Length: 167
Image (cartoon, rainbow, N blue to C red; front, side, top):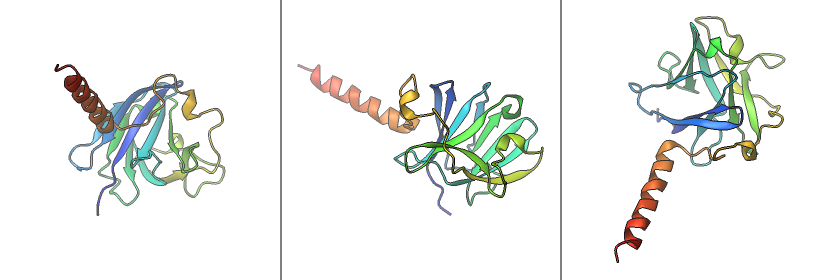
C-alpha cells in the first residue's frame, strides 16, 4: 500500500507554532509535545486537505495517530502528553472550513480526548465546522505548507538572490 504524504501543524491560540512532515517510512515516526489547549491540524497532499478518516490509539498520556488503511500499531505521529492537556485533532475539509475529528460511530461527536487507555478508534471529520477558526485568523503565516514545501521555497529565494547579486 502506498503511503500518503501528510503533515501536522500545531496551533497555540491562533498561531501556528510548528509544522512537521509525517514520514512515509514506518521506522521514522514523528513525535511532538502536546500544549495546553492546542489544536493539531492534520493535512495531506498539495492543497492541505485533511485525511477524511484516521485511526487513533491512546497509550498512557500519549495519542498515536495513523492514517486510514495504515497499521494503528505503527503510527506516523505520536502527540506526547495529549491526555494531560485539553487538545483537539482537526482538519480542513474540501470546502476550506476546519472540523474536529470525532469517533465514527459516536452519537453526539465523541472526540479523541475521551478514549480509554489502550483503545484504538477510527475517527472522521465532524460535519460541524469549528466556529471562529478560519485560515485568516492565524497570527503567523496562515499557510499549512509542509516543511519540505517551505524548504523548497526558501532554496528558490536563495537562488534568485544569488543570481541577482552576481554582477
